[in-house]
Amino acid sequence: MKAIFFEKYGIPEEVLQLKEAPLPTPKDNEVLIKLYATAINDYDWSLVRGKPYLYRLMFGLAKPKNPITGMELSGVVEGIGSKVSKLKVGDAVYGDISHFGFGTFAEYINIPEDAVLLKPDKLSFEIAAAIPHASTLAMQALRGIAEIKQGQKVLINGGGGGVGTIGLQLAKLNNCEVSGVDSGEKLDMMKSLGYDQVIDYKKVDFTKTGEQYDLILDCKTNKSPFSYLRALKPTGVYVTIGGNPGSLISVLFWGKIFSLFTSKKLKILSLKPNEGLDEIAKLVIQNKITPEIDGPYPLEDTPRLIQYFGEGKHKGKVVIKVSG
Ligand SMILES: NC(=O)c1ccc[n+]([C@@H]2O[C@H](COP(=O)([O-])OP(=O)(O)OC[C@H]3O[C@@H](n4cnc5c(N)ncnc54)[C@H](OP(=O)(O)O)[C@@H]3O)[C@@H](O)[C@H]2O)c1
Image 1 (cartoon, rainbow, N blue to C red):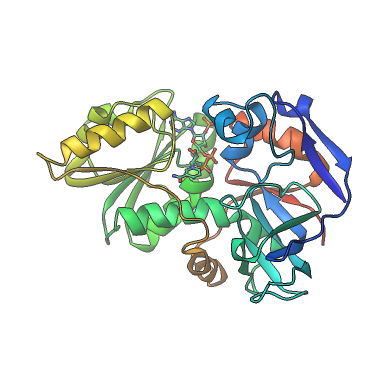
Image 2 (cartoon, rainbow, N blue to C red):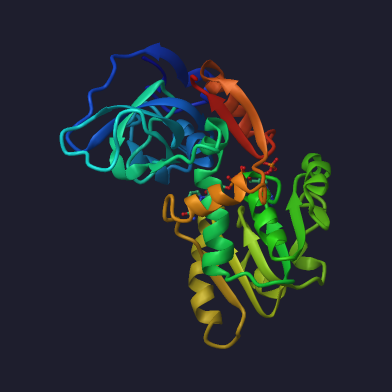
């Protein structure tokens, strides 16, 4: 099979290489999946470069423990281990496999059957690979943690990315007024997607405009918790899904302290992979939400695409068509 390998950390286009490898054999609890599509995530950009350095503690100090990255997939089961009970050969599946390891930038992968869900027939393989990670982050943050309500005033920081573009649509299903913050080049695309206001983060600090929100979804936490408090209405909720590690620790610490003397809330999402994914798929099939797709591109373009993603040039989800 063909796969995109890396044996040392570095610049994606320098360290990632397309190579041939033997077809893997599934263990007892595993299924062998032929990949049809995959997508690029923040994890890939960080894992390939080994930055932040904290990642190296988990994924290999001197060099990567797992030579193939990639965490979202859609495909078809082609082999099963002796103890597999829920899936069979021929089943179309999809999911975010990040709690079971990485390795989707390849033609085949072996993973425990619990890492994936059955793909609805009406969902294309490309869309199925684009929604598992970003959409469930958006869903779990907005509906699960912030308990979004009809007509709220919402702000999404990092609003033009994978999570933000789905978050907007989920908020619009609740008739919310939604502002999006991102880089200047993405603002036109964001307006066309339905944002009511757009803000260029390089020009305006949304925490200093005097506007206050019922709900802030932050994909790029990099400010002090006091700024976020200032931008919330008296009972507002701020939820972060990721960002600068120091700022995240600060939000966690100060969020607990603030909760003692204000009804504003600062919260951090810890993703539960694939929870809510079938509901997202239903919304996509009913045309209630439409994932913003950049691509699909061929597997051999992966090194260039991870660089492109890291430089923030993508719009929505970067999808790679592996076969099919
Ligand atoms: N909570 C969890 O359990 C969990 C699990 C996995 C991943 N995550 C996190 O989820 C996030 C992934 O979000 P995503 O898929 O939507 O990423 P994405 O597609 O890269 O989108 C992020 C957007 O934010 C913009 N941006 C960059 N710097 C910004 C700033 N200072 N202010 C406002 N916007 C800024 C980027 O644009 P430019 O780059 O063009 O400026 C980009 O459009 C990551 O932070 C990741 O760490 C969380």
